[in-house]
Image: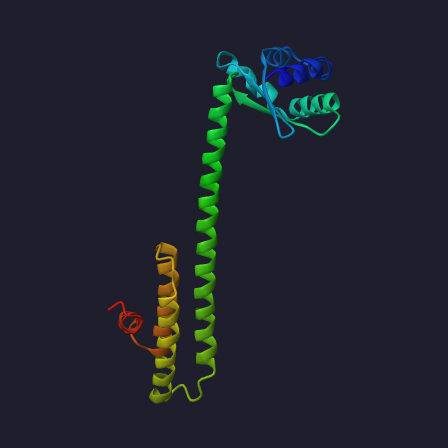
Length: 202
């Protein structure tokens, strides 16, 4: 706590000289230094003066604060502003940070899973197109039947390896079923039934 207070006390005059406006000055004077951790000076503004925080979050003000603090310490230092002025307020801010990171990581994990699932079904979709293009004498039902059996096996295998059964995954699966239905001239419901039976779902 004392280290943070000393740093801020030394840096404040240079910051005040580098900014203009009564609102900014009032906000700077309301700041309470809280902690200095991992090259970050954490400062807070009282809840009663929260309307002044906007002045401190202006890019030019934040940059001036960081330049002055970095000069005091002789190394690049960030300044973080939080709501409140106590150690408890800082702990609350850190818990919120941790929760925000957790949610971001969960969202990234979900996005990666969706991307993998989409990529997998895109591969199947393109594979069906290539296999159908390679069928000779497509007008002959026996040739279309052979293609159909091969395509059913391809889609069923992809279905069995599917890990995400969310709306996006199901829509991409359905897209492949519709493609096979179009190629084979068989109703999509019957195609779906054949694939699900092969995959062990029916």
